[in-house]
Image 1: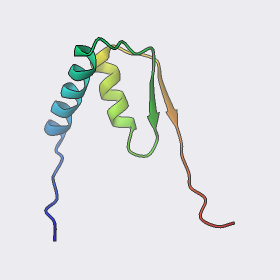
Image 2: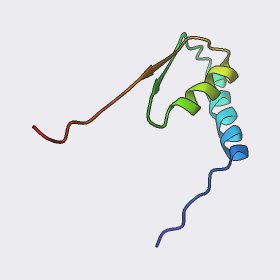
Image 3: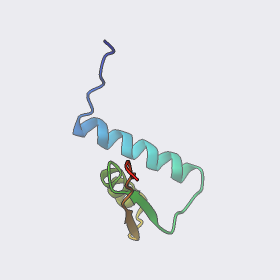
Image 4: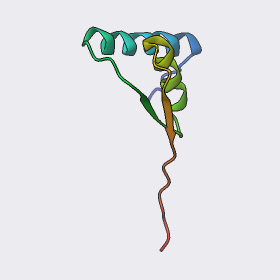
Length: 67
């Protein structure tokens, strides 16, 4: 059985800051952040605060399994 990584709020905060730093260091200045509703809301919020982007959008994605 593979080991699972435990993502604490502290690690999430650090990862969000690291990702925002990578984006900022690249010189990219986004006009908006598009978030996928399942799993992306917290990441989008963290990036929005860190990059000072107030224009956040949420998109829901569903997969159809039956015809």
